Length: 208
Image (tube, rainbow, N blue to C red; front, side, top):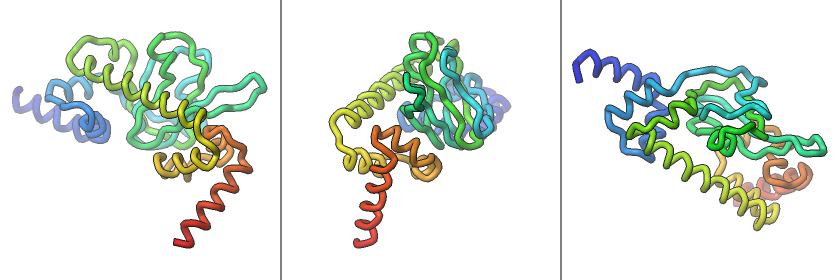
């Protein structure tokens, strides 16, 4: 690699440092991988209240949240918003089934704060270079684990266990930035139950 090409790569690396460091926790990255990352992921900003994805649209992008907060949800037959996932700094999100199968999404993804992302198009995701092959494997594995953990949480845990899991495993930006009725919807409990649990856990923490 020439000096100038190496210098250009370093400059791009600095602008996408969070994304590259996140990927490097799972994948051993070569210079060629970083070149692909910097050319494939595109920076974009969404204002609070705007949609990264709307229901019935095909999910054709993966989003890496560099800074901000987004919420994924669907609307039940009764017209209620049911939250399925939240994503904050340094995390990936898309409507997994829609993205993998390229069919219309049943979910919305909405910015709950001004949010800066790096997007990866489906066409780039399907490219058969060394990095994308490794990234596809990682992406599918991590999403299946996430889906399994959520199903286990909803099906086998009581309200107290769900809340304990939330506070131990969820970014504080999400807990503090998402309204409590959305958190309750995500856990599959009522807002009143969530409020009671918060008081119990707050009292216990103060007694320690």
